[in-house]
Length: 58
Image (cartoon, rainbow, N blue to C red; front, side):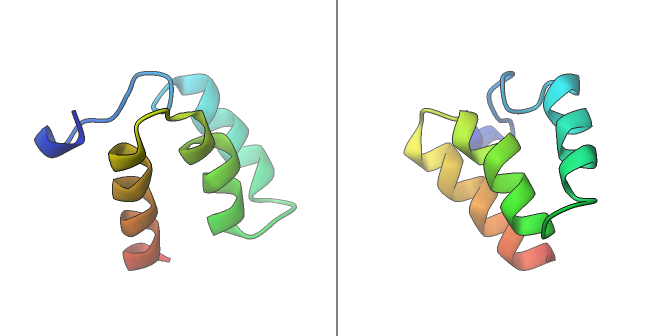
């Protein structure tokens, strides 16, 4: 559903966001986002959409 501006619930879960906050204290933001959000997505289009957003913002 990335075309509607939404991503899978697994990637957007509160737990994933908390894990992301923890990881960015010990590794670069881009790598932390890949490990906690992008790697949990099965759809390649969703992965690419998040990766593109990360590249634009960080």
